[in-house]
Amino acid sequence: MAFASGVIWFLGQNERGVRALDAALVQTPLRTLRVEQRPYFTFATYYAWAGRTDKARAMLAQYDADVRDSSLRILLSPGYHSALGEIALAEKKAPDAVREFWKSDSLPDGPAGECAWCVSVNIGRAYDVANQPDSAIAYFERFLNGLSPARQSADASYLAGLRRRLGELYEAKGDNQRAATNYLAFIELWKNADAALQPQVQEARKRLARLKDIGGK
Image (tube, rainbow, N blue to C red; front, top):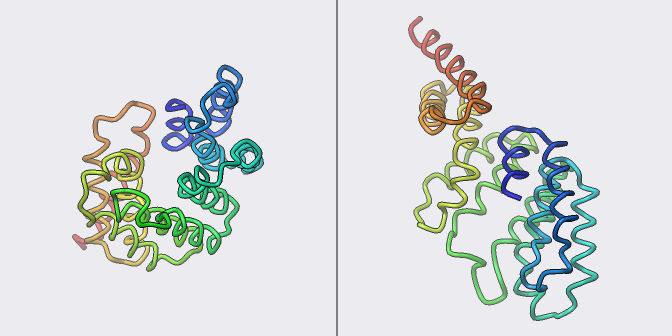
C-alpha cells in the first residue's frame, strides 16, 4: 500500500494508485486478516485521495458489515471519522470534512493519539478546499508550530506539500516574504527527491525567482 499511497499523494497518478490498491485487495483479502488488523480506513483514505469515493465508501460499508463489536468500533472510531473526512474532502464538501476530521481527533476518554496538532493539517486542507485561505493558513501554521515526536509520520506525508501550499497561499495574498520562506523550505526538503518529483521543485524555484524579481524592483 505504500507504493499506492506514494503515487497518488506525491505524484498524482491516481489511476495507477487505484490499480495497485485493487491488486493488494485481491492478493490479501481483508477478511483473511484478524479483524483488528484489517486496514479498512487506510484503503478508504487512499481511494478518496485518488478521487474514487465510490471505492472508499465501499470499504467503509465492508467495515460496517464485518465489525460488529461495539467496544472495538469505539476504539477504531477515529480512523473511521478520518476516512469519512477524506471522502468529504474529495467530494468538495468542506464543512462535512471539517466536522469528521475533528471527530477523528478524540476518543470518549481523551485524545486519539499523541500528536495534538496533527489534525490541524487536515482541517487546513478542508478550509483550503472551501476557498478560505486565511483559515487554511492558520491551521497549516498551527501544524508547523506543534512540537511532538509523534508527528514524524505526519511530517513524512504532509510537510513538503504543506510548505509548498503555504508558499502559494502567501503569494496569492501578496505576502512575498512568507511565500519565499515556505518555497525555500519546500525546496530544501525535496532538493534530493526522486526525479519524478523534481518538476514540483523546479516550479517552486521559478516562483521563488519571480518573488525575488518583484522584491528587487
